Picture 1 (tube, rainbow, N blue to C red):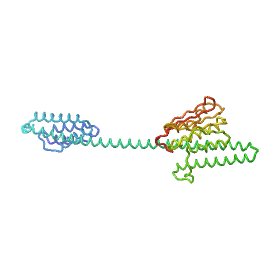
Picture 2: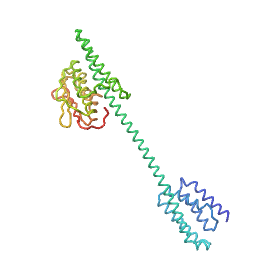
Picture 3: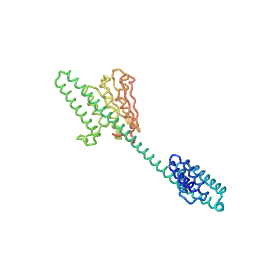
Picture 4: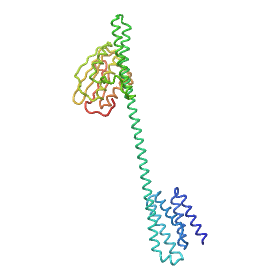
Length: 351
């Protein structure tokens, strides 16, 4: 019988090699070997340890009901083997043996449950860490996209407005025979060029995150709309500034209102062939109304209404601070831009 006992011991140990992929198969082989070995009166061997390891593997990789059913099946098999066996001593010890074996098997299941719970907690922690990392990456990408859009709007506003003034003044200087008038146009070109350069340096300074020499100059705001009006008037456009000063505003709202006026005056110069523009600023309740109306006679087409980064950029600026903007042909002709911007606390929008 010794060769049979050694064969069962080796087979139960070999079954553990497949417990990772096939835990139930490993347990079935180890349990079958143990049921055939111990009731046969063989001496103690490591086979019992192999059975416990296989059972713990089932508890780790399968659900609790599967492990409990396996314990019940093993106990039933041992009980049947002892009952049918020829060892009288084994039959007399049958209740104690089954009870003790049940305790040991349940202990193995408990250890497997603890190991499985630990693995699940570690896996959940890894998933949460991965999700948090992806969330951080998505947030960084979103912020970078918003910053690129903001910088693109700023560059468009600065370049389009000032270069439009320069173009108009340069054309006027070429056609003026009066040296003094031509000199005045050139002076305006120089002023617009310096202003464009200063504002572009400010925008680029944000990218480099360093202080520029002109950083202490007043930031663009609705309090400086008069400067925009003066530049437009110097370019030959009649501009009337009406309404009441809006007073202190959140920085993002102040900048958005300024850029909307700036872009509207630029469009009046470039697209509308306008000769007169009215800029109206009014504060009512929790909003400041910014309205720009011109008497332009240029065609009102898709280019004018959707105007690339111009009209869309103004609408985005208004929406970014919780406001709204409409741009459409005026009832009596020309073109009208109206923005309603909140004067209260706004969302965190970079300025």
